[in-house]
Length: 335
Image 1 (cartoon, rainbow, N blue to C red):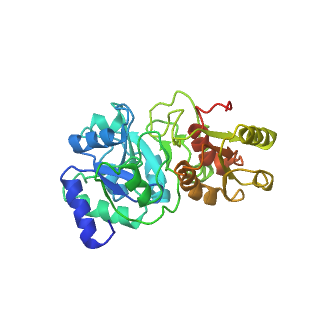
Image 2 (image 1 turned 180 degrees about the vertical axis):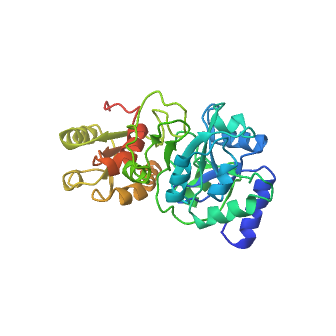
Image 3 (image 1 turned 30 degrees about the vertical axis):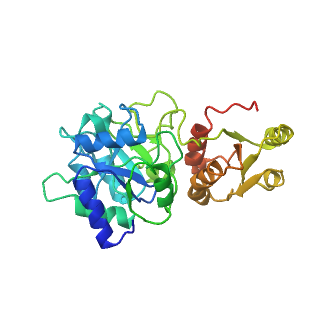
């Protein structure tokens, strides 16, 4: 459905009735439902096939609205909200008493975000209501659990083709990977998931160094923290240099049709059944294109498996490397 006023009213009516709606944001498309409606939240988990203890992020129209969902709102939270909201940053704070256990995964914290996509903000502003505590939308990525996140409305329609899901057309997502998650529920802020808001930007606002991103034993649990996540359905490997060339040659010898995602001239020179070149000089452009590229090759019936050239490293590439490490977690190099 379009983002016309008439279609937005249809989407709002569905949300108010406890239904799920595909919602565009600047990061990825979300599967949105009323975060204060237990039945609506349960539909998110059912549609996605999401584990019940995997928490959701609540999206709100403003930082002021977000404060109503927190039992504590620190100076740290306010400074970050002032700097990066609306935008691709999620704050983990102590939950207010009214927040559903289903939203938090039974934890005493909740993730809150104010997105910057104009359609999302319009929907949230209209949905919030007039009560002292604004209504918000729980909205994980609009895909089956563990699969590649959608950056186009068409991705969402395809993902939930059997579910008659309303999807609001909002164009291609500007950013293309999920939000940065920072835990401000304790005394020492921690980045729990890297994203477009870089750790250095957070540190500049707070005037302090943040704890290094930890891969294991994340507490609190947050969206996208499982070892295997963001994954195509086809076998997907991440290789570089000689290892990439050796594997591609072996795949050809075995009659396997490989879809290659590359960023270097060396990898681009290798033979493959299909290829997609990404920008290895710009982490922002790479982030924007990577999920669309993975989905394109995953949907290509002429491809048996996907090979990713390992992306560059460095602080600006943390989000890309985090997502692709999880996307290829279960892949073995045996053909």
